[in-house]
Image 1 (cartoon, each protein chain N blue to C red):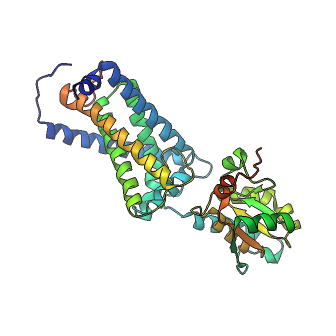
Image 2 (cartoon, one colour):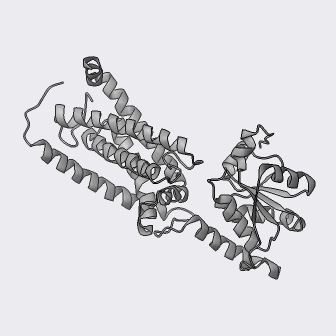
Image 3 (tube, one colour):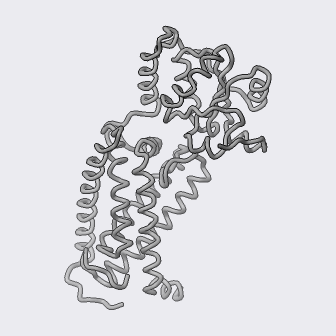
Length: 189
Length: 157
């Protein structure tokens, strides 16, 4: 390794590198925005939270439902949180529908046996896919889970179902983490 | 200490470090480009930026990571690329540290979206500190010791 003669101070060099970083960042941003326009569903420039995005989806789904009870502005159901034991009892005794609110890739890797996928980030696609099943069993409980207590997706999906007219809803707060921690059976696709 | 210093000055070691960091950044960038919504949610979970900047960052940062990674892998503009790596890895580490201190559980968003846990956050912080240190070594070798111009091709480091 050789030391070439220094023509500029180190501070000047760092200054030029900061300039290079700024130019590279602005160029990357322009490319990113341009590429975004090529997507089927471009990301809007203003961020909308998970809850806001799901609300928009539910409003659209509610508009397309012929059943007036399925309006996107139905009164909210009382959603309660249940423990693992309550979840297992409800799922076994009352033949409740279990839905997995995690992203679909995690559902495919493993899920609670018998659970249907209803991922928060693809709610409209999977809700319409399983609408007949959900509607046929609307007098039974819909039990929703996601990763665990820190995951909010089960809450968001429960709120969405509530707005779509489902009244018997419960969230298994412990979620997938609690289920696997107790060594309970898993199902894979 | 002298052995560590000698090892870090070894051309092959520096080449491996440069390629490792470059590939890591390309991989991370590609995962984020595939799901910008998820990356935007990760950025929002840190509760650091105003709403107006979140999606802008979600669109620009992955492209920047891929560009920096590609420059490091091919060995072009290594001085600027290693400086950018140092800045980005340092900012990621600071953001994670800030979330840990404030008791906010976040999905780092570093390599696509995943489940959150404090343990994963600490692991991600350790990884970002390691990346920053590696970038610092690369920058030092290219900007201080060898005194390459910003985009002078590197045949050594």
